[in-house]
Image (cartoon, rainbow, N blue to C red; front, side, top):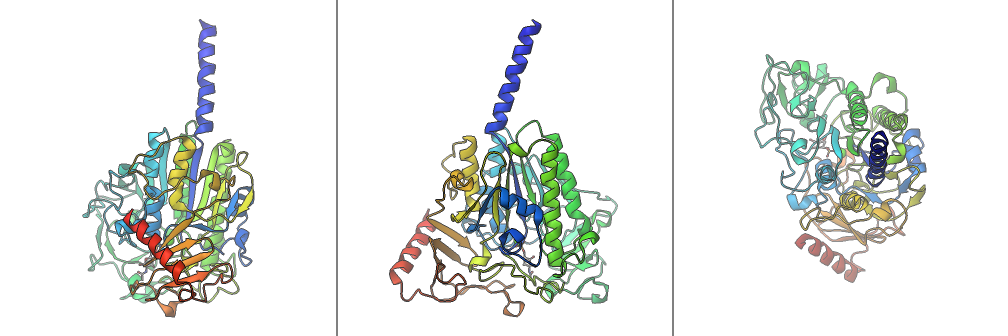
Length: 498
Ligand code: NG6
Ligand code: CA
């Protein structure tokens, strides 16, 4: 009898190990506003990022990897749904926006959960919460839980938008019911000072959009009253996130898990912890990059410590290109020095040029995938179908409609990237080999400002660039290549009608 149970136990153990091998843990480390040139592995010389470089040197480092859009919300939408955000008209969301992802839509965490994973999102959300009239004092839903996450610990929107609190699962952390939160994006609520009225109270000046309620010495977008005990201190948020991530890993180390670790660094307001202040010559933007690198290293070390590294895939990337002045005068511009946040590429966050979406992209899985540099054209939109391919999940007809299975490319076994790759901004751009087409538009987002050195990259005329001879997108060759332009336009029309 004893022998039989021993046999059963060992069979169970073997199948558990097998299940783990076919279902490795997945960690997506998603940095906010990190540009192509912001890491030393990607050519930065003024800032050192040894921890991320270790992933780049030990994994597949992509030189033509893209987030799906040049801003946060649309990129996150596509990452989590495998669907282009333009289909949803997704743009940067206000802090009181309802949940953008419909609860019935298949999602990456939902798909993994269905396949036995425990799923968590820790960090910046910015995909809306609630049904349109969210009460921050009660149960905040629907949100991550309703679209496939078992656990969430969130900055609800962005650090520069109220409410400046953390949300754990359905509730604001540390809220005193005697001091309820009220949020208003149109008019002032409560008596808290604002940046516009009391600029002398600010740690650094802001533009008028960011000049509303002051929290932690920094004025934000939107008005907030109450919730004083729950208000976060920006400096400690990354460490709280790290703590929650370690706990999630510890609690789930015996089963497959998916952790979407969404940094707020290096988005504005940039308020790195004191130990990183002044560590670079680039001011708080550079210091926040080093803090991000440190936290990444701590996360990787924790996986090592638990013996999980060989069974964990890490994807490291960013949600859009870099920006220096995004609303606060934090010296990022004055102290930039020689640093090139976008590397050799033209543009920035928001822009239709390459720098809007071409971001550091690393896939790391020690012991399973070999280190290499890949110039394959890849997009985060394809992670959904690629992970499904990896774990043997067959996509339903309406699941992840824009996501292509590219696992062999993500692991460096194949160099074949996307034939056509869409880049979203206020317009649509399309990559095909070394060609880059930008669709004409007369739209312009309010925050795109030449005086802030933010280039939209748009034109009312079609634009075509040959990146093989013109990496900086300087010479528009559309007029001389009418056939190619037509073909690109036809492909965009085809994608739109899909
Ligand atoms: C813009 C904000 C910018 C930033 C961005 C979102 C203004 C003028 N600018 O609206 O500061 O918060 O939204 O950034 O309001 S993102 O990375 O989340 O897309
Ligand atoms: Ca962003």
